[in-house]
Length: 290
Image (cartoon, rainbow, N blue to C red; front, side, top):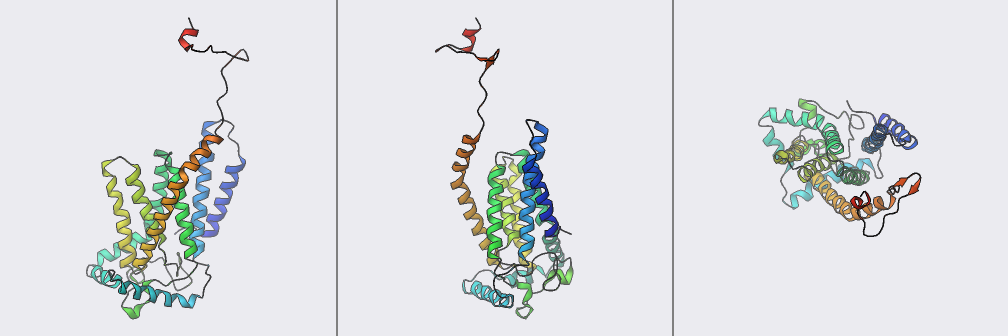
């Protein structure tokens, strides 16, 4: 149901080209449209990279199962909560599993899109910083995902069930097909994006209901785990990447502000009859009108 990465890349390139070449020339409406086109082009580029990541790898795909088994064993050594136990608890009440399948299927991209639109329209001053955090998080996760790792659903011998395939809907087909990447389990972009949405709304909004935004990352963690689409470690690594992106963004914010101040155009001097109006030292505007 989502755009293919080819389509997203071409649309992003087209909007980006228009956004770079068209000059608003002071027209406010056109300025807003061009600015919005540039932002949409950037988001389409990130989306295309996310979709493309599943077709790329720098290591043998057949070793993805070995890496997934290593993660499972490593989590047990650290005594982390078991994904298998959580899934079995959820299977005790099948509506919860079906809800998790649909949440994984539908909520990921639309929730991020709504968050970015809300930022751009209601909190424009905060938009660039969170957009940059999103870009750093997504790019870093995609670089890590070049090393393929199998998700829990590919280990039926351990007791995992592919709930999407059994109860529907599923975003996956057989290996190498389907809507999303098959072996891009580590780290979880789903959880990384959900954490950005929850943390971003809580930090930016002043509405007392803003804390309910944290339900999205909680539901996402739960959904990706009980469906056996991700290991717990996948979310932990994505969260660590997000923290690093936020720290980097905080360090670079003063640099960006200095750059914006230095590149801002100076206001033209007041002119009367084509000549600068001298203002005597110590005079006020009211004294000049007397």
